[in-house]
Amino acid sequence: MHCIFCRSDSTLSKSLEHIMPESIGSKRRLLTLGVVCDQCNNYFARKVEEPILNHPSMRNIRAWHQIPNKKGRIPSLLGYIGGTDIAIGFRRGRDGKLEIEPERLRDKGRVSAEFEEGLPNGFLFPIEMNLPKREMSRFLCKMALETVAETFGKDDVDKVIESKFFDNIRTYARYGNNFAEWPYSERRIYPETTLMRHPDTNDWVPVGFGCTVFTTKHLETLFVFCFYGTEFVINVGGPSIHGYDEWLMNHGHISPMVERLGCRLVTEGEGLLQRHFLHGNFEIRNGLEFDKLHGNCP
Image 1 (cartoon, rainbow, N blue to C red):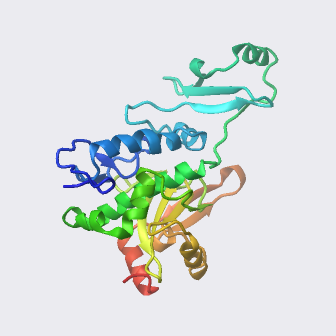
Image 2 (tube, helix red, strand yellow):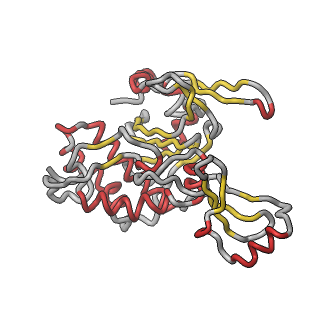
């Protein structure tokens, strides 16, 4: 067996590769041992995933939703004292209440002064997506090629390794030295607090995250990743997003991860009582039937 990224012999590799990182809560989407070698697995964890997962845009969402990393630790909320540039961190104590994280305090003298004045402006915790473009594009490319490998399956994964079609994305994800950038689409498709039915318990739970691949009528392969209502899409074949822009126009700007899979967003209540629900089961076969109906598959 050989690695889909560096093509080195990975027969003896022992590390499990999660398509979506464990630190966002992904436990089930695993690749067969050896599809990604130990060296590439370690590289992606340190150099590609960590800069994104620890960026305040994702870190604060993970902290708010109490999503532990692979070591079981829940990240702290990172923010600022209102009206200042003083960075501060909070974590949840055993009683569930927020408490200041001492190691995150900077300029403790200024912090003490602010506390003495009663902190009239409170605390600000940024949760809007403002991820570094290049780092996020490599993060997406890594997940995209792994999702393609998952789609091919264990018996046909050699096709991913041998095909020159995937050379650009594998090189960009692993080394980042063949293109200055790899553009992607980013948009909000439902509120962060949206709920869905858990497939096992049927309880209402946060929608969270998910990813898949789909095709356009030009037979472009696109990868989509959703994280608490923010949708990211890249073109697996090369650094262009024009095909997705056309797909959106042709399909009324629906989402490939929501309406294409047979789901729909329902909003109930008003004002502070307003709640959002995704109804449906995110069935992959619905997406395949959609693609076939609209001439988006081979």
